[in-house]
Image (cartoon, rainbow, N blue to C red; front, side, top):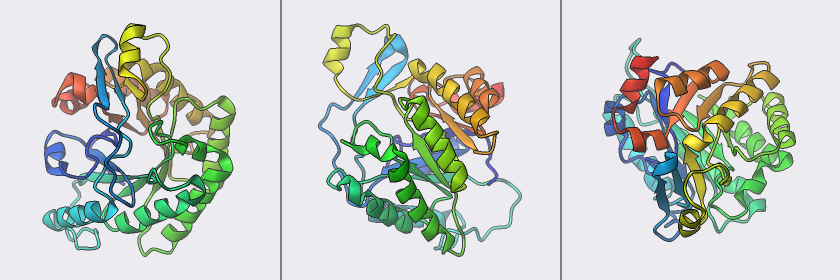
Length: 301
């Protein structure tokens, strides 16, 4: 795929594909919608999103709140038609200008037991397949109980191999990526890399939010009042870059990487690309730097 630029918006912001036009106009090269689940979900109780300004960080425990895959697929179908694509999502236009890329981040419903999780990923994959340019399998959010257990090698193999099988049966296959947690052990990371190479996964998103609260400036009392959730932003920058570099070197550069974690400036984005990332996503940086962040980073790069 050809991207207008390497700066994308990570999943969890435009969960329901409502703001694609606005986000494209802000300069994003691509946007990842979702996380999308088969059934609509209200998510966790509010408040569930908190700023830690002293650390340029956020804590969220959204809980996969979304409108459900049927509603979101219809919204994307309408977007496709308005933007010069046929109803099956394929371009009717012949242009050498790279178009706005949309990724679909998919997950399981909270009520679905882990042993049945592969069915939820299948439902979302089939429904969104005509309308997104690539998929990200999310098994790394800390806000759905038990979800991170699906990062174990055999659980991952079952989900990813099943999606690959469906994908191979389509007239136009779509890239499938996996989003991993920054809290994985070295052995778990090695397992992910080995599996990705074995099944020829199209890429990794590195990384999701962390449950680690070490080395923060925000006081313990403030952190206690915020409570549980995934931490994102500047405190994740170093760990994310280290993971990108390790995976790039471990895989011999054979696995495309979308880097996410602590990207606020062009220097941050360049650091990720120098470590081996192909593309970069912002999320928390968008909140702190404001709507000009993409254009500033692109100018800096």
